[in-house]
Length: 141
Image (cartoon, rainbow, N blue to C red; front, side, top):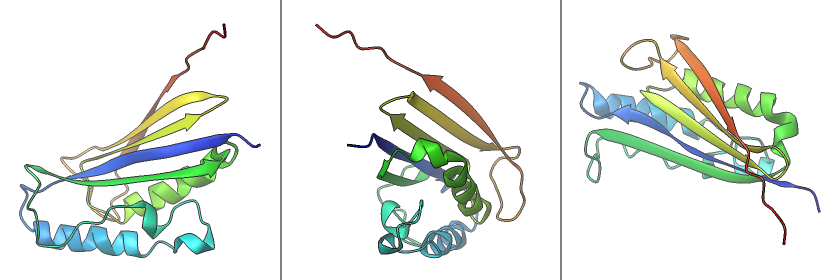
């Protein structure tokens, strides 16, 4: 059986800024522009929770859009996954984004995107990423 990879995380946006309903609408539209799961892309609509424009009940100060999926050894195609994720982020409003990649062979990697401003504006290109890697060895009895 091929190794499994788990990818999950969240994209955060502030609900305190003016125009939040418009920001939620833009973010929802960006996620709905992703292909459906049956087309088996790296990113698909079904793996994301989508904001309901104008509705912020249940959120304190942050709109949290979470996502997750299971893949067959996605780490071998990770650059393509990252390219698609950054393409999605480029179309959205966000304060930060975090992706966790759990692999059976190569440990856990955490990627964090931040904007050089208070928040990312669609099309601005002002984002940078950091990666942290950890690997746990399990002793067998």
